[in-house]
Each structure stands twice: as structure tokens, then as C-alpha cells.
Length: 67
Image (cartoon, rainbow, N blue to C red; front, side, top):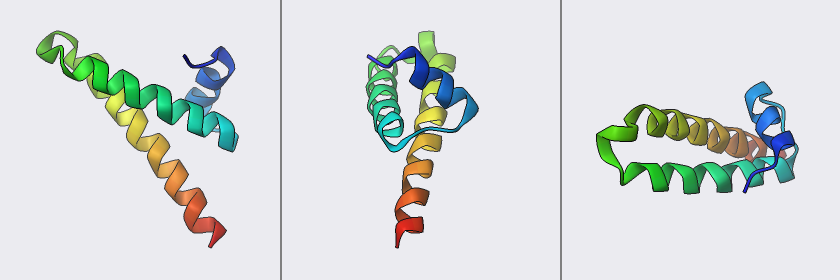
């Protein structure tokens, strides 16, 4: 489960490393769980998928910045 605080930070796009990991875990599970429902939840799945990809991009950027 993702905390309300982390969800709010996802919307703003400013997350601590811990919040980023929490959000990636949450959206990975959400995307996977919605995918199996097919067209019925396609729009919600797409939003979760896009959010997950954005979060993964943030994580990759932080790793590249460290090096």
C-alpha cells in the first residue's frame, strides 16, 4: 500500500528516494493487476503504466546523476 503523502508527492513530482521506491513498487503492482482485466480498465491501466514509466525515469536519472 502506498501512503497518502507519497501519492501527493507523485502528483507534484518531488519525491524522496524512499518515496520513489515506494511509488515504483505500488505502481508496478497496480499496472500488473490492471493489465489482466483487458479493455474494461484500459484507461486506468494506461495511466498507471505512464506513471510507472515516469517514476522509473526519475530513478534512472538519479542513478546517472550520482555517477
